Amino acid sequence: MQGHATWDLFCRVVDNYGDIGVCWRLAEGLAAMRQQVRLWTDDASALRWMAPQGAAGVQVGHWGAAEAAAPGDVVVEAFACDPPPAFVAAMAARREAPVWINLEYLSAEPWVERCHGLPSPQAAGPGRGMTKWFFHPGFTPGTGGLLREAGLLQERDAFDRATWLAGQGLPGPNADEQVVSLFCYPTAPWRELPAALNRPSLLLLAQGAAQALADLPLPPGIRTATLPWMTQHDFDRLLWASDLNLVRGEDSLARALWAGKPTLWQLYPQDDGAHIAKLEAFLSTWARLSGATEELAARQSALLRWWNGAPGAPQRCPGWPDGTAWTAASTRLAMTLAQHPDLVSALLDFARRKGAPEGGNG
Image (cartoon, rainbow, N blue to C red; front, side, top):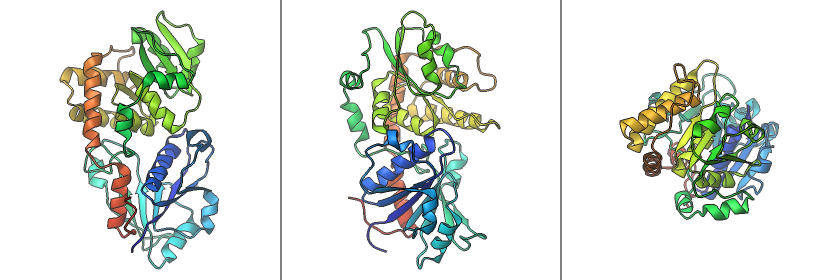
């Protein structure tokens, strides 16, 4: 097959905004590679503030409308959301079946490399006889990589914090202050954070649980500023503007890693505790890829376990690593990850190897 591919990307918004955030970045990235993308979602409301400008080459459609649509060359279901049965039946009826990909959640667990790229033959249902392929984002060359736009790190390096903060109507930090961004789920020990920082800080409070801090008494030397819902473009710059980033969920983690700044990641809490295994795998991967000393890796691990309420973690903030060493390790990690193919490029290559049209690399 020749020509540029048409992609159908399916996304269900279960809760929060990580799923639609990942899918929009993916859709926009594919469109930047001159692919035609239809993003089908059951709730596009977050895109009004996340991506109000839209993107050339991306159409957003309601989930139910996909039942009457003719499938494109590649169908991506994000996080095993299962496209509508009528759409899958239309996929199976095509003369050349689309490449069908299940984009999985991000994890550093060892099994990810083993499962990345594996086929899942469909033995029943409207897609019977077709093959679905597993595609796993990740932190190593044996996975699908992370979303990273062309030129992102160059933009980061040329970024001017003072200008951006002023443009957002935000105060600049005093000479002795660190800038800390806070975006968390309610289960994080966010009430303890201001006292735990133990140094003058300007806390930039993203939407969610963190904004309650603005109404609470704060220790001396701690200031806060509340943030509106931000576009993805501005959220990236918030992370670049901060000296320490506390983020939640998978999309925000990847963006914080590209910022190259010290980061505390709060995983989405799961009742069965599966997020703790993902946390431990990430801590091991972070230590290995960042080149951190054993002491630095141990201190960061203790912090993330505390922040995530891991079993056996300290009840109070266990203290902070040396800031200079932590920043250097975070910068090295971003440089290491940037040597791997980005997720959009890897996904395009994978789809073409499975039969999607060539072209679109311009």
